[in-house]
Amino acid sequence: MMPALAAQRRGWRCLYRLYLRCQAAQFSRVCHGWQGSMKCGSLSHILPCSRLPVQSLSHVRVYTSDGQKKGPVPGPEGAVHKPGTARDTSSAGQKPLLLQEPIQVKVKAVLKKREYGPKYTQNNFITGVRAINEFCLKSSDLEQLRKIRRRSPHDDTEAFTVFLRSDVEAKSLEVWGSPEALARERKRRKEAEIEYRENLFRNQKLLKEYKDFLGDTKPRSSTAGMLLKGPGKVVMVAICINGLNFFFKLLAWVYTGSASMFSEAIHSLADTCNQALLALGISQSARTPDPSHPYGFTNMRYIASLISGVGIFMMGAGLSWYHGIIGLLHPQPMESLLWAYCILAGSLVSEGATLLVAINEIRRSARAKGLSFYQYVRLSRDPSTNVVLLEDAAAVLGVTLAATCMGLTSLTGNPYYDSLGSLGVGTLLGAVSAFLIYTNTEALLGRSINPEQLQRLTELLECDPVVRAIHDVKATDMGLSKVRFKAEVDFDGRVVTRSYLEKQDIEQLLQEIQQVKTLEELEAFMLKHGENIIDTLGAEVDRLEKELKQRNPDVRHVDLEIL
Image (cartoon, rainbow, N blue to C red):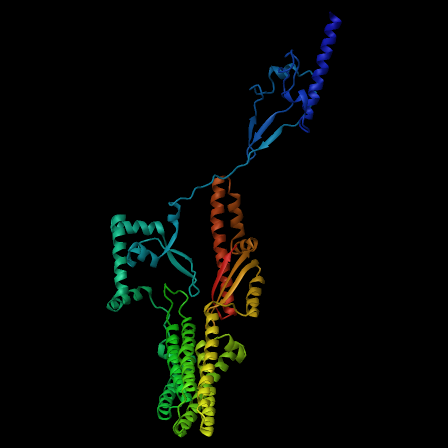
């Protein structure tokens, strides 16, 4: 029995040693077969004898993110091994079979996600004008509220006063008593506003009070001043001369019955009407921008020029072609052409004088913009002056063509030459009208600026250290030397943060960092400086927009979108 019992014990001891080696290998590789069912610290699940000296291989301790020890983790059997117990005493005299360092598990601390609801948005800011209009308050009501100075979005002011929306809402409820009363007042004011718009001339007193509240605004250029200088002066001179030419040409046609003279009379009438339309467009383009038209009315000049081109085609070219075709189909003898020649000579002189005025104005404007005469006309930089230039050039050529055809008719006695002259004048007017329609349509569609100018604007942004890259660049010519620039900018957050730190007391900032001990203090610290860094980014955007406008006076509106 004894040898058999000793052999059995040696077999169990070998099996136990094999088990320990397998458990040590589980930390570096995956075990297969029956070894995978063994549990660390015990063989009671597969061995018939539970009295074997089993020793725990490892202890698992859990640490938080601040380094504090939380204690050992219970084993599979629910018991926690503590030093100094009977279990340790029983095995104190034995040599440890395997030594291993305790496993430390680091628990990641995560800031609780905050749900932002309507209550949080009550901390938004609102301007005084919006508070008065939307919450039906008076300026005296706002004087009792908290005032906050913020960075201004306007170029002419660095900072302006805003109010907390929650304070404004509370004040409106205090003034009106309930949300229902406030809603009724809003409805009443909306109806009054509609009535005010329908009866604008009967509400001059309210308009004056509204202007007094807004304060001094930018004075609007007077219509008379716009029509007495630059393109307006050219248009007014052309109206006077073409009106006189139409009157005298009409008398000459009535006296002679010449088809060419009739075409010239219609030509002068069309020029007079079109230039009156141009004068209206110039006066409307000087209007101050309003909420319905935030970018102003500068395109009114292009609209007037476009309608002028259509009018020249329909009224001038159409009637000239019609009268020339009638003359070819039903030729009529003409009376003495002496008076017609005299009137055409006078028209040639007057139209030539107007043409010289338009040429001088375009040369002066083209020189100021650094463009050639042809480029300035082709790009339709000043549509009103271009219309006068082309109409007068066509008038001079038309007078010359009409005089030539009338002379051939007088010499040969053949009235067909006169009718051909009328068709030639109509064709000339049609070509002028087609050019005006094309150039003004291109301007109204929003064409891009010159590639060289766009490249200069792009390089100015890319050379700034705060900009990493720019994308989706668009620069649109809004007319009358006004450019709208838009780009998506990838800002360098490190440069923006460094710009913010340069304006801070680093020693004080370091002390604030050292005082941060809890998650709540860390959150408050990050929120404070995060908002300041966002304000710094907004200031950098304002700086870039200001530099673009200073170095390129044509750029009036800049939209930089942050990627």
